[in-house]
Length: 109
Image (cartoon, rainbow, N blue to C red; front, side, top):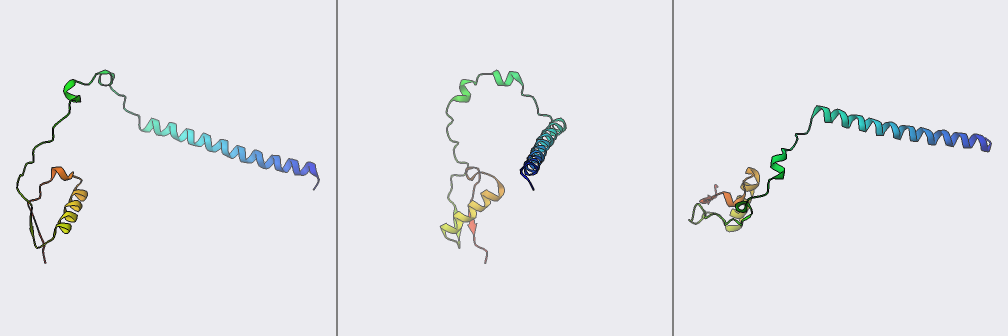
């Protein structure tokens, strides 16, 4: 194979690569347009975005008083196990720990 045929072969290969890349770009752009048409974004209410926050909203808020001032009663379990049980309950339920009230934890044998 002489040098001219080699150049033409390499130019053809490079042009095929660029053509495939250009078609992928067009495909992604087309999919983006289709998705935007299928799921239009909700426009933000201009009145809500321009409102200044009220002074009450920016003031520091005191922590609420605990709803249950009693103590946690551990029956047949140690503190480490009770802490793990409380952490698992918080994680599984999706409720923050400061919103849950544990009155007692008992080991079931």
